[in-house]
Amino acid sequence: MRYRKILLAYNGSAEGKLALFEAADLAGFLNAETHLLAVASMPPSLFLTEGFVPEELLEEEKKRTQAVLDEGIKSLTDKGFKAAGHLAVGEPVEEICRAAKEVGADLIVIGHNQSTSWAARWWKGSVGASLLDYAPCSILIALSKG
Image (tube, rainbow, N blue to C red):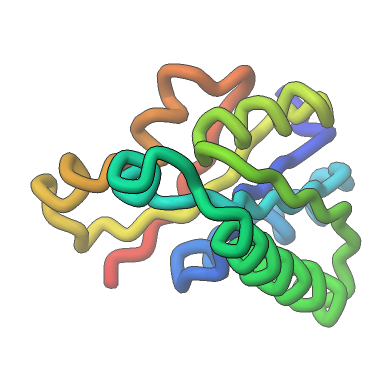
């Protein structure tokens, strides 16, 4: 299979930066269209305790996420790669799948830190593990063993 459109789910973490450059290298090699997605999400605990997400908190999270997205686009541009940026608001797995369908992605790239314990992954959830069940296309997981 030849990947023509790659969607990178980016959160600015060390694992995300590793995935950023793995996706860029792959896109360059394949001459694939690259899309960078950052998802603004609020912790479920906030919604459960408050019953709603205050607008000012959501706006702060959107600004922070936009800054992460801008940094990712700049990192790619500085290395000679071109990517379209997308900002989404919501639950990461749902938004990644929605964006992949919207752009017609053949491949989703995400970062993952293997040093996280199974208990920590279970407690906070693993985007990568959840994507396996819902992704509309193949997934590449860039592993960080830090």
